[in-house]
Image 1 (cartoon, each protein chain N blue to C red):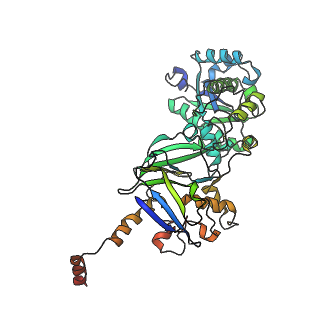
Image 2 (cartoon, rainbow over the protein chains, first blue to last red):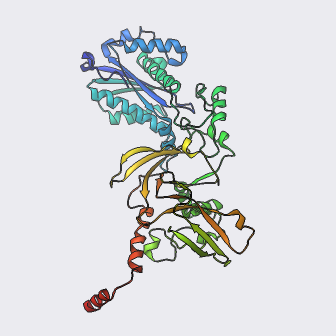
Image 3 (cartoon, one colour):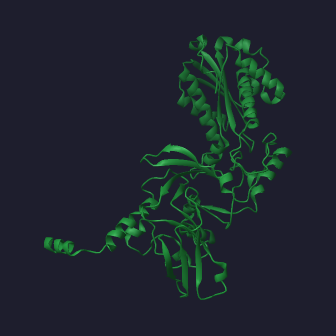
Length: 298
Length: 160
């Protein structure tokens, strides 16, 4: 989403771009990266447009400012909405990608998109994620022609970042408000609250939607530590991909036995652990390499 | 997998097991059987269709039609495998009234299936996966167990 369809005339002049994020902390819904850009000559006018850090503004004021910047021909904008399913999946896969990396990738993705449009970016202002110095080096390496200003609280220091924060925040709020739940269980409701783990409304939504087998609907970021407090008492799930990491260590744990047994579909057998794995151990290599073993009893 | 009444020896204890396989027994669960790359420590019904929502996800490198689904926050990639020709899948349950009879354990068919969807966690399913390769056994087994005709025998001894 963004103002991509029209490439403005001023895009060929040196331009500045601000990047900010919304929804990094919440346990519910997408994380949104937003950017705002304009020609460097518009910089002074920009600071008169009363953009401020989106968090200091009331919701209706943010909405109003978003509409006004959308209709402003001197400004361009774009957003990257990162689905909670993607956040959970990336943070829980074997080679875990942490939230900082996801954030960096999203910001760089936005810069790529704007450059590809043909906008001549010379300066990019961005709120830091992690160490500012390292982040700046990473960005400069990927985009050597751009001067980066990576700073804490960039959203309150630079109007172009304040504008980006409005773009991001409004998009995030709308995305959560209009979220279409994937799940079709009964008695689901949409009183999400802000999505922050401390919000009482969010807390009760989580309480109302926890599930002993599935955990939560996919709106929830499963990788957030706060989830564990709700899913205690639910069915334990052991993953094959987690298990292999522990191979060579104590692999006689009950979990391993149960896990491997699930491969053949019977979880109640009382076989000893060395016989448990469906590994084809002791059989001809054809069977070993296919993990086929003889099952002579249930 | 097969059709008919099967008797199996119960390992160690020697008590016979009676498994009743009925091709027309109960519900057809084709399209609803999922093999997931994890162990869920729960035995019993779960509202799978309300929470587990596979979506089509294009075609894999080796031409397999792929699906995606999420479970407990993890991305699963799967593909639906039809059972080979001549084979059926059976969902069995232990007959409760057989428990009193300590001699024989009875299992009966409560559903059948003609395909199942198998899911990987870290990577897209491919023909190189163990599960795919396990089916090679069926071809091999057939070759091993087919009766050898006199002509074939004559031919092979001739070539020696």
